[in-house]
Length: 163
Length: 124
Image (tube, rainbow over all chains, first blue to last red):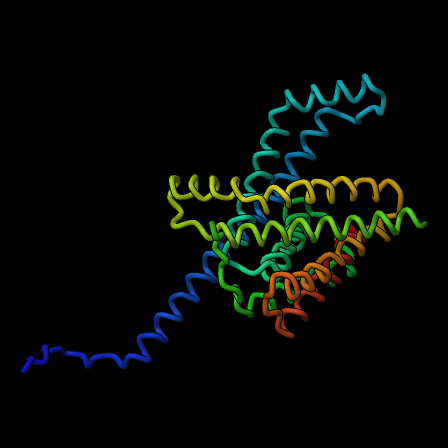
């Protein structure tokens, strides 16, 4: 007869272990989705900001063949624009990574949180005046993202490619 | 007027279609094994070999350029709500094409985000 190993703690019930596993898995899923969506928001906002700054350095583009050619050359030689492009590549990669495990209908609205962050930055950093309608919009976005965030990030199973 | 409506329809189809194709492709690729540089390079390599990703990229580029064209044709108050409507069309696509389980709570969140983005962009 096999002797039962002495333990200070009783053996956990198998169902409890499964539940604990499920909770850990869900927390991990939520955490990595949150990290990727945050990365998406940061990269998209910084990318847009850098592109705007770069285009301001270049100046207004003249809609003539020589004007467009000059603008194209200027953008190629502008470091700020390249930095913006790098951030936008970062956005695309983090978006692709997020939808590799999370639902599209979860990632897409969560990404809209960037509009709320932009408004907050405009108020806190640039001391811009924001009207009531915009605050209502920001509130709706935040509440909407929180509602979507309460649902399960992944409701489909990954479909591996069959060779 | 008709050309604006047609371009709006094209923009919504290209934008939603591109993102749904990208999601479908990335679901086939699967998530990265880990977040170490080598695993991430392998993940990007697999994504680059996915035909769905290559189908999605031109659609996303087309949606970007059609948005620029729309902005030059129609006022912002028309273009912005239409582009925010993408959230609703995208959720329908996720439900019926990607077979995602879109609960009532998620629908409510999507609609609130859609209205919120419209208000923020119009007042911006």
